[in-house]
Amino acid sequence: MANRGYFGHRSADGSSFDRRIARFYPRAGYRYWAVGENLLYSTSSLDAARALDMWLNSPDHRRIILKARWREFGLGAVQVVSAPGVYGGRAVTIVTTDFGVRR
Figure: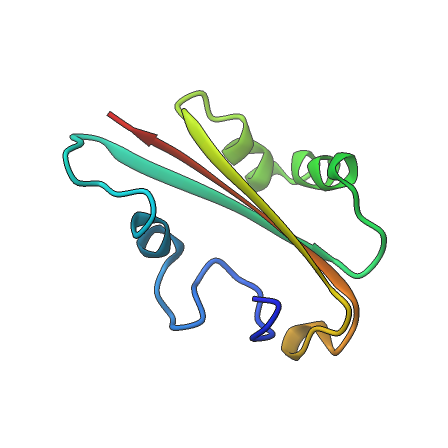
């Protein structure tokens, strides 16, 4: 996202986030598979506590975080000095959390 200047759950190639996640978190061999994703970016100072506060203050993001079914999660963060596209060349921090369950 930072290198290509876009922000969204869809991948740069237009595929949905669940298809992207399935490449690393396969469905094969499981009867039940579900994933969720939260994203955020900020052009101002951002630490873990602030990122979590932002998500918890958003009903949709909060609902994803608090779903009891999740059993695994991944977290990624990147800081870029000058991000193109939707970021307007500004310095940004982008944070992604992905949640999953397989049974």
